[in-house]
Image (tube, rainbow, N blue to C red):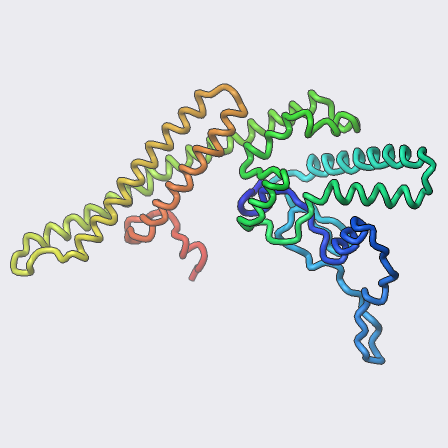
Length: 326
């Protein structure tokens, strides 16, 4: 899960204006007239045929969107295999069809007309599933508040995204459809947890090494040069000593240096706490809620140091060098 980037942290379905309008009218038990002519753009040009409208605006922020003639499921990370998510989707669809079929048969048993029974069932399901339909910006703060009021989960990180796999009420359909057994799902859950924990552990260790062997040493060399400059100007009484701007450059870099030392120590503590924990879900939670934020904070300080240290001391590729090669 990309959560606050892509894909969104809240799963919802986008149907588009046309389908949403149809479902809303069905829910209100309104008669839907033949509107075929409304779905065509007449260009009023004799040598061009009419062109069918696209029934959706193709909301690119939705994790599950109807795009004219199909649904797109966009909640799979770029590095993930789509096989497991597709199996989950197919199982969910199969389970839904079975539930719908059982409910329809029960309505038919009450001596109702088939078409009336179908429309009644469709109307019920539209109301029951309305909470997951959303047409707006899936990354907006307003949607997060509204989704919470609708009872939808906000899965902000991998730890939270994996939690439902351990909840029987959310995974029962996998067993009912025979797609997975309880042991098979548990095994997949454990593998995903272990892979996530190891990845964050590796990334944290790599960041610590980069900070120790590149960033801090480069910052120290720059600090030495700036300190020498300030002291040299202070000794040059005829020049009135170092100006405030020169001193501020040294002070600012000293602050970045001490901030990074603090972040580096905090990262070590968090990694040690995670490695000492033996409960996998708890380890994953520490990775998501403690280690990842510390790494992000350390990265911000490293970026500030990168922009301040001279090229002769900075041995890593700088952003501008990677983005704008000569």
